Picture 1 (cartoon, rainbow, N blue to C red):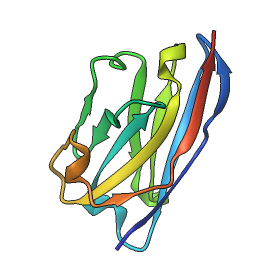
Picture 2: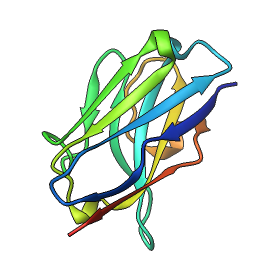
Picture 3: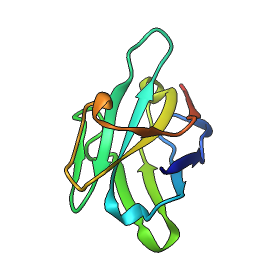
Picture 4: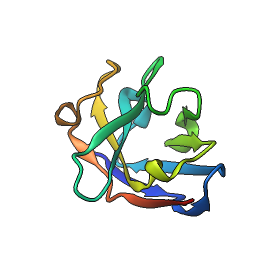
Length: 121
């Protein structure tokens, strides 16, 4: 079992930056692939980025967002730059044992509670 807690969300103007954190407890985090997803009101949960030994990104965020991990701190980060109003959503981190990169939400077993990101125009 692993428990995930997201932090770092907030309100930012378009063009600004935020860094989200996903901190894990309960197991050795380095054994897990970790993904970030987001869900806006009325929309389905969508993939943002994932990290194992490498990284993958959704087309909508590639070049603006960077996912990274600090295994010593049991934390995965999502650095979000050049934010747009359409990035507004609740952001969730998710984890699954093994280091295969995954972009489908159903492939992740563990989820955090989410953190709200609001980008004003």
